[in-house]
Amino acid sequence: MPGIHLETSIDAPPDIVFDAARDVTVHIESARDTGERAVAGVTHGPMDLGDTVTWEARHFGVPMRLTVRISELDRPRMFADVMVEGPFRSMRHVHRFVTLPTGTRMIDDFEYAAPLGPVGSIASLILTPYLRRFLARRADVLRRLAESRARRSL
Image (cartoon, rainbow, N blue to C red; front, side, top):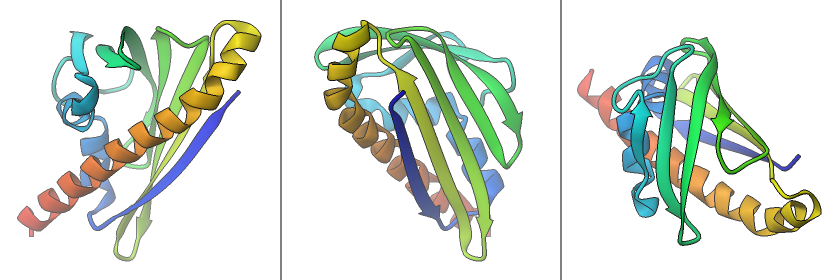
């Protein structure tokens, strides 16, 4: 199963970063390039344990729909979302937040299994770098937003 590991240092406390990371409105902003929008479940604001959201977006020019559920949540240390329905055979994204002397290290561990057996394995050669860039853009938007919120709270 392909996996992506991404770490981002953020100059903001873990609670601010955690809350931004589980906010549907922030995710929409971070995925602006794909036209991503929440169409069912939680469609704005923070998600909590057991909540679902259904996303619609265009990836590779193809319209896609993905429903995820928050399967684990330990504020402000971690939460995980899993695919309930969508284009992957399976998908799990674990978000962890580690306190640093200067703020937070946000850690994304994203694992997925492509559909279509051997053909899906070949597609993963293109899909994994694409998803890594998608997650890195999201992390950068989260970093900027959380740092801005932290400065305002001083």
